Length: 507
Image (cartoon, rainbow, N blue to C red; front, side):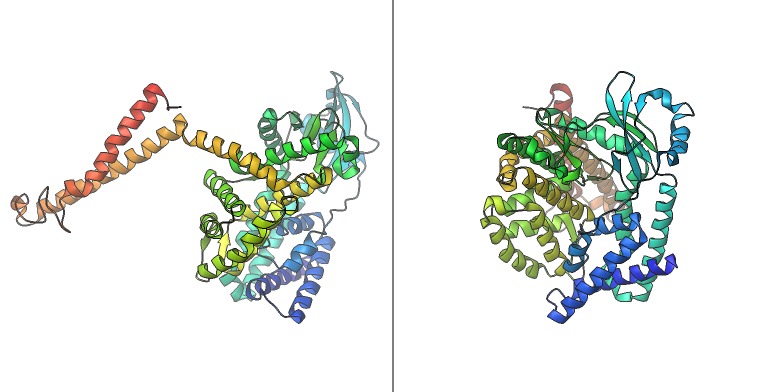
């Protein structure tokens, strides 16, 4: 019965993807049908349980794939979870920490968890040094159930693809699901979450009013971490700070996230109000690092360029940057995409700063790209959802603070850091090595050409025949003329590497 429900869900998702891609300007009747189907998809996800709810929450970050009606429905998903008794988690603690696991703590409050989610429950504890901490324990069997659900949904998606051949022309649904699963797999192993926390904590070291909990001990299914001071923003913590404090903390949180997107290339994927704790003395603490996003250096740099183009009302520059973030397909309509951005970008650039939502702007551009046949990296959707979440969070604590204005102020710092990294000793040495490698390839090609010429009849006249001499001109330039540029590049690379390794990069 469950398999039938999963197959039905996959079919509904396939229909939504097809109509979203093929009917951007659908008539009212078609829009009503989309809304009805979107509601059925949300209800099916909720009925199938926590894993499918998480899948829906990630799909909500992909407005380039699913319809706007479905995005709206998926954003309503809430992972309602039943609290399990502590006795159910004791076998997990024994397997991970040993039968005498209680020796690690002075006190464990097993009466009521301070947090409960689909994969784990969290309990307050006191360590032997007197410090307060939290104990996060994975639900028994949760990892196995999630893996089984991944396999079942993957099979259903492949069946839906075979049943709807047109779907393959628009989207590789199996690849999209694998991307979603990649986001979710780290949540199955708390050592991965601990690594995310440590990276986030290092990135927060330069911020006065922002921190990340410290990891005390981590195993695959058990995590012990320091307590986040204060209470969650979703619980009304904004009232604990004065307006000046809220704006200062909100601006730091935005700068921290922008630095993650564009400089560190690593960011918290779900900074919603429930994951931000506020305290009058310590500021903000960002918790729950199970889902984190990563982008490569090139994507981070081009992403910063794309947002700069929006701020500067440069639609053509944004179109060029966006193509760097994705790829064209046989359906790509680049002139149409540029026309779309010509209409959209001025509206974004001319908006009042306190009304401009960069996350929503990113979603709008994703939809334009999808409608014009441009495939964008799945990570851009995750980045957009993260950005929309943090802007919503900051708006909840400091409604008069402008996310776009903070971005513009942070942009110079971002650009300076990117420039510094590009001019670092490691990067200069790398560019030199790339030139060396290119020079070696050119030398090999030149040798192959010379060997071929030597085997030809009349090779002895190579130096005197027009078009074949060392200094010959025209289309048949000689090897030295053809590869002189590469040889010069080889020499330049050798000089650059020598200079860097002896003297270091110029400052």
